Length: 474
Image (cartoon, rainbow, N blue to C red; front, side):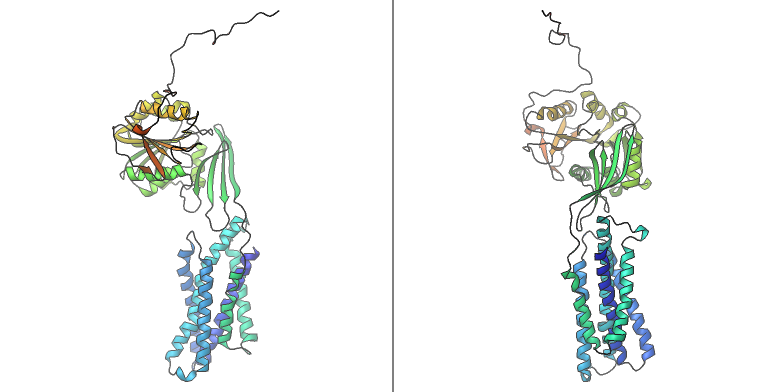
C-alpha cells in the first residue's frame, strides 16, 4: 500500500507543481489575464483528460510500460522548463502573440498530457500489486489509494509552488525540478517479488468428488492463472484476464481443431472441465454447434461462475456418463469429438478405452469427422504397455490413428498425448498440433506385450493357480 501511495503522491505533486508553474509562466506575459487564466485552466483539464483517454487502452495490456511513462513525463517537464527559462532570458527573440500559443502548448499542455498518460499505467500497476498482496480495498480496488494519494499531492504541490516556491524561484526552474522529481520512481525498488502464491476462491464436495477453484498469483506483471482441481489434481487452467488456456494440451488442441475444422461444425466434448476449450471455440466460431457431456452439474456451474462460460456461447450441456452418451442413439453424428474425461487419477476410465467404446465413438463421428483423445502416459519403459494398449485398441476400430506427443517420442517420463482418429485411411492430418509433434502409425514401435481392451473377456476355466487348495499342517 505504501508503495502505491508514494508513487501516486509523486505523480500528483509533480502535476500540481507543473500546472501552477506553467500557468504562472504563461500568464506573466499575458495582457488579458482573466481571459488567459480561463484558457489556461481549460487547457490543463483538456490535456490531462486526453492523456487519460490515450493511456487507458495501452495500460490494459499484459505488459505495463510504467517506467517508460515516468521517463516521458520527466522529459516533457524538462522541455517545458527549458522553454520557460530561455523565453524569459531572451524575451527579445519571442515577439508577437505566437509565443503565447507555443508557451501554452509546451509549458502547460505537454507536461500535463504526459502526466495524464502516466495515470492509467500507475492505476493498473497498483491493481496488480495490491491483488498480488491480497489487499482488500473493497469496490474501489487500486483506484482508492491512487486517487487519494494523487489528489492530495496535487493540492500540496500547487499550494507549495504558488505560495512558497514561485516567489523565490522562476517557473522554468520549478518545471525542471518537477522533471527531476519524476525520475525518483526509477530509484525506488518495487515491492519485493515473492514466489507464486495460491488463493483459494471456491471449494465444494459433490456426490462425484471434491472440487476446488484457486487463483495462482505470480510476482511482477505476469497474469494470474485460475485453476480447477478435481479430487486434488489440476483439471483445467486458464489466464484470469485473457481466458487463454494454460495447460499445454488444451492450447495444442485448440490450434489443431482450428486448423482442421471449417466454421459451423458440430462438436462433441466428453468431459467439460472448466469449459475452456468449448468456450474458446465458441468465441472464435459463433456458428459452431457445441455439445458437452459432463458428469457433475456442479462443474458446469463453476465454469459459468469462475471461468467465463456464458449463455451467448450457446453450449449445450448433457449431464451424465460419457460412455452411456456414446451408446445412446439420440445424438450425432458430430464433425469433431474431443475426449477428455478424468476422475483425478490421470487416466481415462476403462469404459472409455475399450474396443466397444471406440466403436461407439466411431458411430457418433461423421463420415469425414475427426476425433481426438487426451491421454497421459509414458511411452518408454514398462509403463508404455498401458498407453500403447489404448492406442492399439483404438487402432482396431479407426483406419487412421496419429499420436501427437508433447515432449517427444523419447521422453522418459509421463506426458500428455493427443490421439487423433479418423474413418478415412491416410487422412491428411497436420504434422503438428501446436507444439505437439505427430507420430504416425508406420513409425510406431512394436506393440508386443500390449493388448486390446474389451468390455468383457471370455470366461477362463479355473486352474490350480486361480483356486489354491488348503494344505494340511502338523
